[in-house]
Image (tube, rainbow, N blue to C red; front, side, top):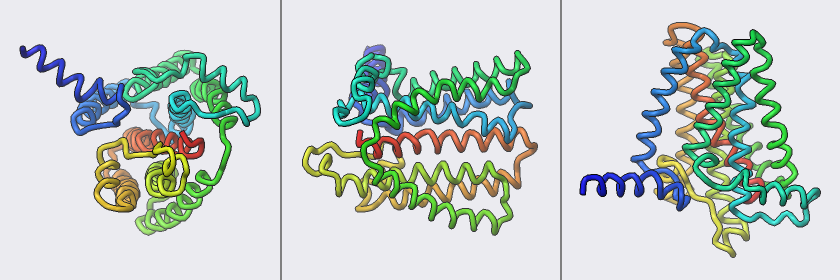
Length: 295
């Protein structure tokens, strides 16, 4: 009986949300967060002295890799119409290959495990070979083919331009606040940008796309907040994702100010910045590309 209750709990809060595409809930979010914190602690202890500003730049291709792979999976699931696109036969062959089919390893949390493992192995290999440039090179080699696939699927740049325009305006305002508190660190600006893109892309998807796109209005295929906090604000009130966006921006700014004042050393500082960037940029780029592709 206890075993049955336990398995039912696992199915309800962990397995079914993946199968049914219902997003995160408070239970699986809490568990994933605990696992992520533990993994981060192990990674920091193992590679502590290698966490520098340069490593943040070198890690960006791996973050973008995860986002692009996830978007191609979204496109595969949505049966996107590519008949009018250049290289449509090639793109259709990619989507039908089975490589990007929706499953544990192409959706959260599995994709974080896969991309994280590739990233850590690439870092370890570059250290062992004493070739630091190998680390970003591996990321770029894996990213470029996936990024090209996504770019070839783009039909309309309208929502991309809306997201980027809003993001630039908000970044300029946020950057003024960072400057006021004498935060000049480039990693802080990347972290701010990452969370702005995440917040703005969510806002545009839920509040703009869902109200203007025939895909949502006529076909009922709409975006919803997949993360607990994001969904809470989107369901709280009309245009509730404005508060989610504001929260993301405020978090990035306050976190940057605290890191600059409280970090014990440079390695710790850049490691924390990297974590903040990952958890803003990875979902942010995915959201941006999803809305751009309409998947």
